[in-house]
Amino acid sequence: MLGIFVSAMMAGLNSRSGALGLADVRGALGFGTDDASWLNTFYSAGELMAMPFTTWFAITFTVRRFHLTMLTASALIAAVVPLTVNLNLLLTLRLVQGITAGALIPILMMMALSMLPPPIRLHGLALYAMTATFAPNVAIWIVGQWTDIVIDWRWLYWQFIPVALISGGLVAWALPKVPVQWKRFSSINWTSLAVGLPGLFLMVVALDQANRLDWFNSPLVSSALTAGAICLVAFAISEWSHPAPFIKFQLLARRNLAVGFTIFIFLLTTFLSGTVLPTSFMTSNWGYRALQNAPIGLIIGLPQLIAGSLVALLLYRKWVDARYVMAAGLTLVGLACLRAAQLDALWTWEQLIPVQILHAIGQPMAVVSMLFLATSVVQPMEGQYISGFVNVSRSLATVMGGAFVNHLLEIREHFHSWLLTDRFGMIAQILPQAANAADVSSIFDTQALTLATADVYRVLGLLAFLLVPLTLAMQYIPAPNLPSKALGSKNNG
Image (cartoon, rainbow, N blue to C red; front, side, top):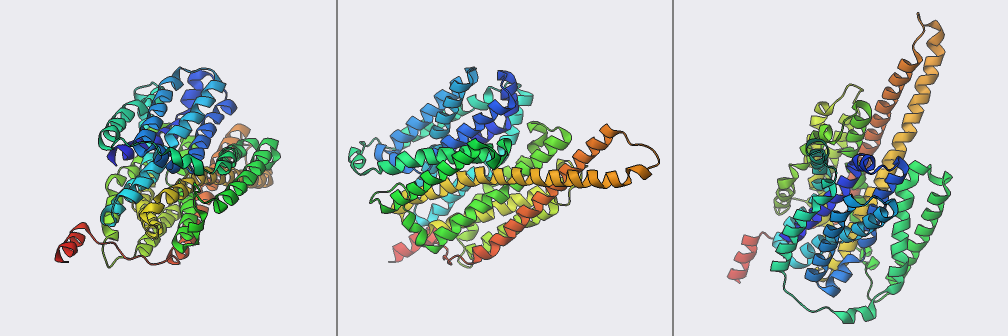
């Protein structure tokens, strides 16, 4: 579990590092902004493509063999990516690396659900939760070290290699060698594989490039979104009727799974208010680089080393209702957004400290509780299907949430810019002296960005509050027995 956890965390860091350090990579390799944007798109597409199918192949080829293969492939690609200057080859490598690294994350969820007994399963889920609460936040500081301290952007990719050696050594030592289950290929759902892979790829391309290409005004975005949606509908139909599916959609008939995964998607969208939104504001307003933005992420990320386990210990208390813990976490995230919505153009990361502290407490409360409520209605043998659900939801939420936040920010920024310009035009003639056009334009840009960011904070805060009643509608799940109690009852029996 430790080896698998380390690799899953590194896969999350690898994904976020590529996005945060894109400007340095683009400058070093001489790519234009538009061309370089596809590097993150292809990696994100590869990640999502791997999510629904990983557990099936891990079981078929054995976890040990599959994990080590994906880990080795990711490390080898990480070694050669900084040495590649051809854009088409680089895009291909990033796509394959997204698939191989993305496959490492669902294995962690599958192993936690299938191998860990109820008395300690929550701690395994807390480890998985760190891929959403720890890795994206600490990545900001790590990128800052490579780009501004070491001053070598290549380590954005090479950082994966030493961690891969540690993870691979642990997994190779701990997991036994067992034969491949070739018989499973006789029942594989080839139709789902054929339509699911291109469908997921096209959806990520459409959503990730939508803001840059102006959404439905772009033939590429429109066609990719349409074709991707058709493929995914065909994928769902095929999976529903197949006797051995990759994802068992019938499990969504269980209330906690259907409601839980719906909440999970919107929950991760609200989490963008923790790092993505403030770092974007600081970068645009103050010209911050990753190193200057690092405190924003560290205030949330570092406490997650113990926060998830503390929430797990709380959920083991018999008098604790996980629904209320989750609702409290969502409320804290909502309050953090409302507090941040009071920002002005003079704010730096220091003014965001109270906001980030609320996120650091609220995020693990919400995520760990949600995973507990959703997975507690699942039997261990069903863990392979639930892992696909959780990870597809996680990856889709990241892409969809990012597209939504960026689009909303752009719309509100244009609105405020127009409004300020219009008001200025009404009073310009009565000012005692003519204003410098360049100065006025700069001030308006800053204020428009500030007002738009505040609007997005309010929307994300409202979304967090709206998830609270949905959380309380989930089925109550009693706390599992602690290890000592479970052992004591067994001995008494």
